[in-house]
Image (cartoon, rainbow, N blue to C red; front, top):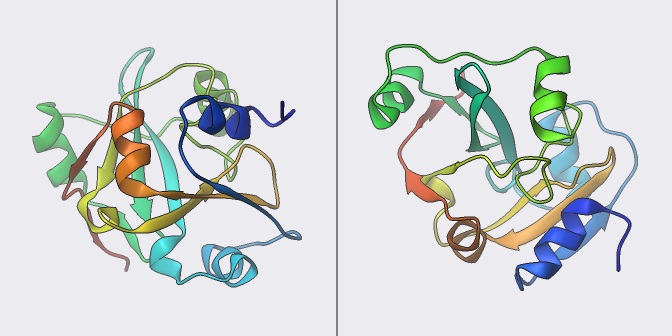
Length: 155
């Protein structure tokens, strides 16, 4: 069994995957290039706070950003926020830049932007310089998540 909790989790869920190891990167574009994919297929896992100790994972294509009005409407709340780095690590077990819903310390709900549906996507894998390539549809279903239009074009 892998010592990487994300790889162990994806294996346990029976999702086909590829673990991609590469050197250090400093942007989504660099990570996409290092993993040999388009920026839109390099998906950021963002931790969004709904309330104290209540978070949701939002899977956002690398060329897009969260649409706060769309996400608030979907979740039926008036306020959402991004936790600071220490809080995000405490909520997920992962450092920013490596966060993934796979193997997180808490299985928060997952919302994947609808633009990932039907695609193969690359997510963080819990370690710097490592990506996890999975079929989005199977991953979201096995994580108990849902697809929704929750992003806008990146500014």
